[in-house]
Length: 278
Image 1 (cartoon, rainbow, N blue to C red):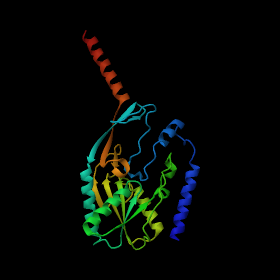
Image 2 (image 1 turned 30 degrees about the vertical axis):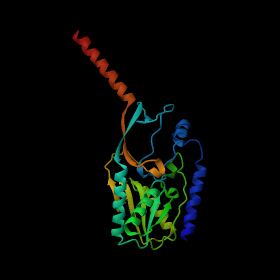
Image 3 (image 1 turned 90 degrees about the vertical axis):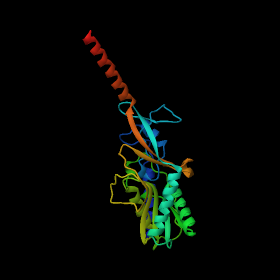
Image 4 (image 1 turned 135 degrees about the vertical axis):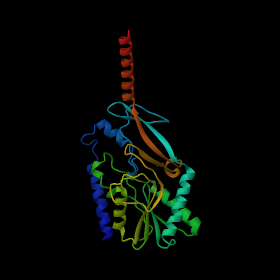
């Protein structure tokens, strides 16, 4: 029955993707839709990584990325909040905590959520092996068919196959993801796991918890708690997927258009003061 439910969910997901192959959606211009389509969505929507519309015709190599707004162009600034060494230490600590909480590694399975949750799960498994000299099973989970925002996406999420190292029933499953935000992606991950069987426990490990939960979900293991505003984004970069290890917080600065308007107003005010004094 679990396998049948999973197949039905995948079939429904495929139908949604076929129906939504049009070039644009209501409220989004064709040009804007094509711009968004150029940037594939991350399989996990927790990080708030999706950017706004990029200004057509503008390119950049390094530094802030310009984004379109009604007033002008947003300047995006980013700050590194976790270095390579800090990520390594956080994952090592999480490995120790997983071993301690589960009283060893018996029946333990790490499940990485595509995309960056998979290499994180592999790294934690390697740390566990270095500590306990035991190989931990690692699975890969595609939450795409279980997301609750499929009808809201302009571009459907990229599909990845789920790979489980055997039956999940009776196992201690630890879901691993890069960033925990609203909790909706983790809800989807739990639904995907339960469709495959009946785990004994489901636990959650994340590299970064940025807050702003919309569902009653709390991580069991956290690499770093980072208070954020909803106007900020957390981006995890890993050498397996991005060529380097770091975590950055991206902030939206004042728009170029607003800055220009402010400068013009200041000059006009100054001229008026000079004319009045004359």
